[in-house]
Every structure is written in structure tokens, then in C-alpha cells.
Amino acid sequence: MTILIKNGTVVNPAKKQEQVMDLLIEDGLIQKTGNGIRKEADTVIDASGCLVMPGLIDLHVHFRDPGQTYKEDIATGSAAAAAGGFTTVCCMPNTKPVVDCPEIVTYIVEKAKETGLTNVLPVGAVTVGMEGKTVTDIAAMKKAGICAISEDGKSVMNSAVYRKAMREAAKLGLPVLAHCEDINLVEGGVMNLDEKSEQMGLKGISNAVEDIIASRDILLAKETGARLHLCHCSTKDSVTMVREAKEDGILVTAEVCPHHFSLCTEDIPADEGNFKMNPPLRKREDMETLVQGLKDNVMDVISTDHAPHSLEEKSRGMEKSPFGIVGLETSAALTITNLVKPGYLTWMQMAEKMSYNPAKVLGIDRGTLNEGAVADVVIINPDETYEIDPDCFRSKGRNTPFAGKKVSGKVKYTILNGEVVYHD
Image 1 (cartoon, rainbow, N blue to C red):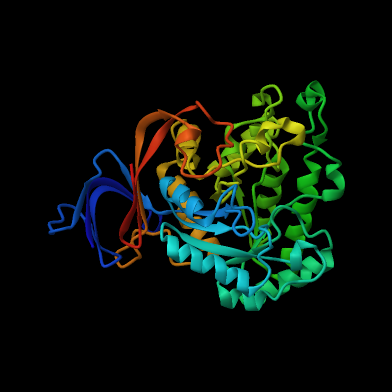
Image 2 (cartoon, rainbow, N blue to C red; image 1 turned 90 degrees about the horizontal axis):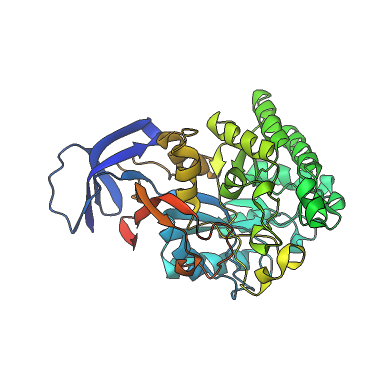
């Protein structure tokens, strides 16, 4: 198939290039970029007024498959990803059963190929059964197709076990995606520990729950040489620690989720389960520091932590609802609305944090619009406004705190391997 994209503002982080031009896709590759390209094409897209970026890459999603497909499955999750502009996603291993062996990795890889709407890269568990005791056969899972290891949903509390896994990951060239949570300090908390939790009469989760493990993981990365990526950072001190670790030459990167840079604990209404996530929404000063960390390029990546649940599960209020919200279909618009339009990020930084940098974390040949590159492309109208309507989601999950929010930035096309997989 030949696709000719005309007159779009091409944002290519690999070359620090941002200009209006054409882009020619043929045989699954970007064949040519430039002005006034003339070529017979199967599909011609007029991208006037739109951004043409490398396909978005999400390092952090939960597709619930295998085991909890009433919440999400690989097909519906992939459809949500395509609608959100994502061409590659990394599925966390806390499924049922856990992704802790080559057989389950192969199941995910093959099912994703059948769906064909996005590249689904499985993440392998750090320990068998995610029980925190025995390190998995990471080499065998890498051979089957994992892109990283993680115990996301919890932390490996035994530092010796985690160090062993980090050493193996470093030897195999796999990044370690770290969920930072000292489970012994959570003590039944369901939201941030502050005046709001006291007002609502709910148990709180302090910043130390995240910060203590983030500090430990950075020190283990320093000792082992592992490539550490801190998931869903939510505290002001996480930004400080990442900055200092980078200055110390430690191989650490970090992500921020749209809900953590868009909302703070003040925004939580009366007992509403759709505002319950882990880590929780923090205080305004934390949110503002995360935004500054993204602006200063201390924080490298924007990821969604897409975590679908059923309507019934999320209707139980803050105390009894499960943690997690969906994010694949709102991430680009929230980034544009809350970061780019107000001037915190440039379009180039958005493309870096949502595509180019995630590709570098994974060590994959994506996130670029260079000639000869695989044609994973997203076209976004940055000025189209709309209200977020969960009933229109492709995901099975409707659990979002952003329902009814007016946003700017509509994904118009998602192109995967040179084929249009989504068109608004």
C-alpha cells in the first residue's frame, strides 16, 4: 500500500525536525519526506493543520489478558491503543496467570499478531508468580519476546532477589520497569495522605511509600548497571531523585502519567472510585513539580498506566474500588491540553516523551520519521476540541476521572507498518 500524507507539520525527534512537508509511505516504510512530493498513491491524506508524529509508544498498559478479559483483552486493548494514536504498547505481567514463563509470553505475542492493530510487547515478571521469592527465567522469556521485566502492581520487597534480577536483566540488555511501593507502609491507604483524606475519613498513602523504594531501586541500578525505568512517578521527591541519579551517571529514566500531571488531590470529588489509582493523586506541589520535571526533561516519558476495570468494580467508592483508570484514548489530548497548549512542553518534547524516548528505553527501532524507517505514524489535529465521552471508548474500561472534560487534540489517523489501523 502507498500512502501520501500532504501538508502536515512533521515532528521528527530523531532529527529535531519540525516543519510543514509531505511524507510518502510505501511497502511499510517511510520512503520520502519533503515538499511537493508527487506520487500515485492508494491513499492520499490531507494533513493541513495537523501534526504528523511517529506512532506513540506506551511503556505501561494492562490488557488483563490472560485471565481477566471481562475488563479488557488484547483485541479491545489494541483497538483502544490505535484510537489513541499508539502503535506500540508494553503489557504489564500482572495477569492471571502471571507472565512469568515463555508459554504465556508466546500466547500474548501470537494473539496480538492476530489482532494486528498495534505492536504489543509483553513485559515479563521479575519473580515467579510475582511472589517476590524466586527470579524468573528471564533469558527464556526474552527469547519468547519480552521487552523488559517488571513486577508492576507491586514492588519486589526482597532487595537481594531484586538485585539478582537486575543483574540478569543488565546482562541480557533488558530494561527494568519499576513500580515503587513499600507495601509495609501502605497500611490500607486508598488515596493520598493529606487534608483531603482526613476530610473524607479515608486512610492515606504517604509520599514515602513511593520515595523509599524509588531510592532503593536507583541505588540497586547503580550497583548492578541495570537500565532502570521508574514507572508512574507521582511525588516531588521522585523528580529530585531522578535528576540527581542522572547527574551521577546512573542509567535511570522515568515516566509521568497524564492523571498525575493533570489532577491533584484537590480535584477528587466526594467518594468517587474513578479517582482511585496507584500511586494516588498527590498534592498540588507534587503535580506542579512533575510538570516542571517534564518541562526540564528530567522526566523522560509520558505513559498511561492504562488499567481497565468493570463499571461494577469502580462503583464501590474510594475505599472498596480497585486501583486504576484507563488512559490510552485520552493521553494525547490531555498532554496537548494540559502541557503543550499552556506552554510547558513543545510539540517536539511531546513527540520525544510519547514516542522517541520510550523507543530508546526499550532499545527498539521506532519513534522516528526518518526515511527508511518503519511507517508507524500518528496524525493529530491539535486544535480540534471535544468532550471526553467514556461511552465512545474502544476499551472495555470506562473508568476515567476525565469524563465530560473538554480537551484539544484529536487523533485523526493511526498508521501501523504502513497500514491505516484507525481513522476518525
